[in-house]
Amino acid sequence: MTLLAGTVVVVSGVGPGLGRSIALQSARAGADLVLAARTASRLDEVAKEVTALGRRAVTIPTDIADACSPRRSQPAAARS
Image (cartoon, rainbow, N blue to C red):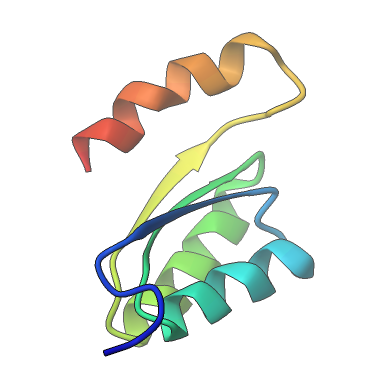
C-alpha cells in the first residue's frame, strides 16, 4: 500500500515547476488529484501525466488570486 492511497490531493498553481512536481509525487504515492491553475493547457498536460501513472485527475481552471474564483471551483471538485 502506498502512503497516499485512498486520498485526494488538491494542488493549486499547477505549472511547469513546483505544482507539477507536487502533483506527480502525490500521484506516485497513490493519491488522486484535483489540479487548479489559470492555464488550462498546463492543467491538461499535468493531468495526462497523472493519469499515465494510473491515478485520476480533475482539472479546474481558476485564479486563486481572485477571491470569487476558488469558490466557483468547489462544486466542480466535489462532483469528481
